Image (cartoon, rainbow, N blue to C red; front, side):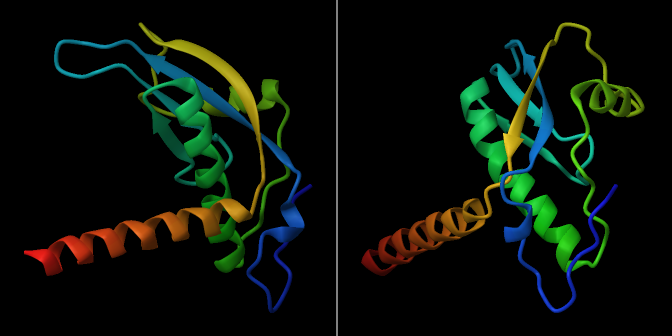
Length: 138
């Protein structure tokens, strides 16, 4: 069962506490690129985060999940109920061009935390302020 967005609101607060399955794909380093981990939410459009480590990828995944769900709510699209891991694995297998060759695959869950959107916005604002200050000093 999916949840339809509430009329007149764009908050994902009502989704707080739901846990969505995320596929963590560890890509070993190559001569042309350092190792990295991608975090993929099969149910969430554009639900892909990344980091240098699993921990970083999971931190990014929290923001990506909140952002993806916020987009669905604002676009008045259905918000999917979380799948169990087996169903999420089956859904991910339908993605074209996704190979497990040379990739370490594991699964985790990420809980919806709406405050991740505010924290990211604050970090971006602080970063922009630092950039502006540096430009003024030039």
